[in-house]
Image 1: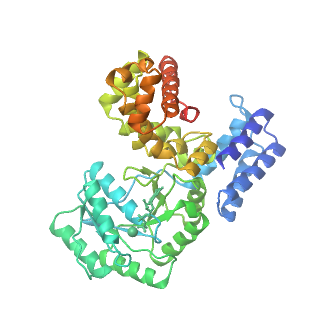
Image 2: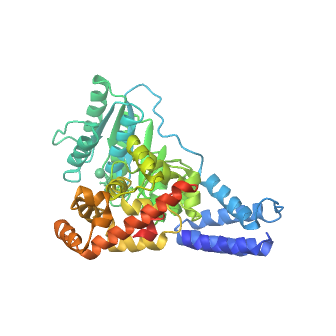
Image 3: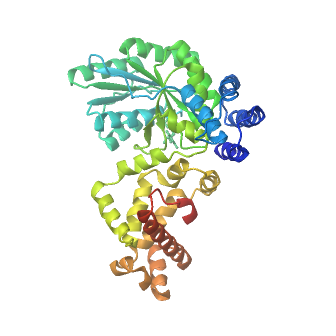
Length: 440
Ligand code: GDP
Ligand code: MG
């Protein structure tokens, strides 16, 4: 979708005049692109009509090109349709406040439960208890327990043989007795919406009176996710949506129709399997993702967040002196792994659709970082500081030591050189992220 819209608007930019024919033509393409992105047809129709109404007849502003003006109208309308900025969960109640997580099997409920609990604990200083009510899938309760241990969030002790409502009541009781602020209830899913699932969720809801009922939906399932949301809202009543797998290719499309069809706010975006891969839902950013401008803002924010501060300062100092050595590259590689790997990073940069696809297909993503890290680790301290020391025999040694090939060592050295060059330029110029795609 991104590539496609990018192309359309490039075309508009060149045309230089905001005429009805141009708007109509561009919007025909927008319509096709949105449909391809699995946005529901009524939503697309509504969207296109609104934009057309706003665009045609609007005076061309002097300060912008007609193309920019249409982009702005499309963008504003996307943002409006995606809904207002969300500020997380409503937890204003007598503690412990129950948060009910619902959705189909495999949508990402358990993962999202742990991610949200981790965030509430770390960022909001809440005391959170998690409980798995999934008695259907073997080891489902253990899965949450393990995530709890990983994230440092307490989980309700497992008692074999208890039913969901009993567990939920026990969780609320434990929450009360032990002074928890929030009790997160992770429910079981089904492959499809069915009566037994709804009955189970409704019974848990009635036993715990949650302030928030979050539907977890897989953004890659597009239209289906929207239907599931409608169904859950009609039968259980949801207060918000967590859209998972926003790191995949479905992106914007599902978000747009989800919001338009259910009218419920999208409160979270899951962007990977790791516990850190949770973002607020920013309509502005999703709109620009849909428009193919890339989500540079959230990439930069994310980088800033997970970058240890002093390390960042040290790096900046070195970069400005043009001393970016292989130790620094190794630190960067480790940093990239934290950001959710290449997939995570590329997904947020503009115009990277093709490269991303290639990486997804080859599944080299994190493995490549590990190999590159291994290569650098196999070098001596001296070699890392002065890569030019690496002659043929040293390269052979490093390749053998890291279980790679001389070719791979060369490739890494070349990448390092290019990066060092670019960083030197960047620190002199305006800054910005290096073009990672061209370095792979
Ligand atoms: P549940 O059945 O709804 O509880 O789903 P799980 O939480 O067990 O998740 C199913 C799978 O989806 C797991 O392998 C998760 O790691 C993965 N997953 C969950 N959220 C995301 C996400 O935002 N992005 C990606 N790529 N994978 C996710
Ligand atoms: Mg689960």
